[in-house]
Image (cartoon, rainbow, N blue to C red):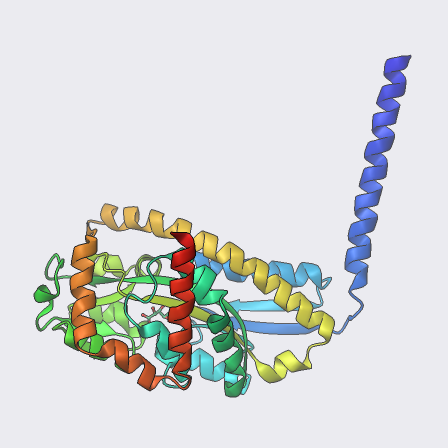
Length: 349
Ligand code: TK8
């Protein structure tokens, strides 16, 4: 008899819990009162981590808004390269765009900060200082001058050097190498200083140029190399980690301002959770991607700190680091970021 009472008591507790949870959830979702439907087009590059972030963002927007905020995803640079999708977001043809900072730094000069070689030493610094620090937040907020709402920072990653000619471990081996760079004056200066022959090109043309050998190599994050199968058309991957490129996630400002406060909170909350998922997925994918490159027959060269220093010194000697500040609209952001990084590194000691 006693056992029967216990079972009934447990069932009653479980039922009340279930009802309680359903009611809470119902209360949560019924809190969303705005029933006006909003459909947002989002344009993103290729990449497993980008897909994870974008899909998470879509699902959470739709869940949190009772399906009244829907997201149409255009992946794999389908709607164009970085400059194209950012311009599309500015005029409102695209609602949300994800772009590397370098190709659009000429439109928004404070993005040149991220073209300072070896600015960040690891992803902890990028996430805790570069993205979450005061300077990173100010740069994202400043995008409103382009008619864009800066929603978040995502990860493209630390850039490495790929080529088909030689197993590069020193800048001395770059002499005359035809290297695709992003359309960014500081990248061009840096690779000239390293002895290469830089060829600026939109990302969407890189695979064909490598395949047809009109260029000898390119430099990109490991995630972008593997997601776009660039490793299949080049032989050597040197892990230089020479620059960390972020993705900026931006929304057409007029569309953002047209959302109700509740809808803005939903978009912001969904983006924050999607960002966490995206960054974690990117870290995981990078490890897996190195194995994929090696299995495809690439020779992956893990450079020593000394070898990386050789690249950094040549770029420093060429004054490229100093020119970052002269290109920025707010050069004080460069000093601020350096101070934040030094403070962060001292705290980590
Ligand atoms: C993808 C680009 C790419 C970037 C480049 O749209 O152009 O090399 O690293 O990720 O943003």
